Length: 110
Image (cartoon, rainbow, N blue to C red; front, side):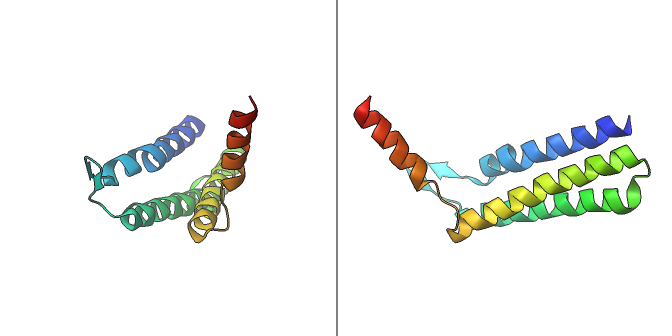
């Protein structure tokens, strides 16, 4: 039962952070965007950091069963990876120009 609760809470939190948060922080009227992108980014990073800390706390102190601790460590790795990928994308270290160029090349040649 605890395993299902860990998975369910993390899946709901992930959906909330990656789908709900951008939808809630984006205020747009026509072509004019009224909310700032930095607010959404800050909330996303804070949410990912909080989820990471909660899973680490679960793995270190709250969960007693070894299988469930491993599950918390796995979710911690997922949130840490998302946090690092988001940070790298924000700083410009990670971009998708290669994907755009590949798709444009395919469009020209197919």
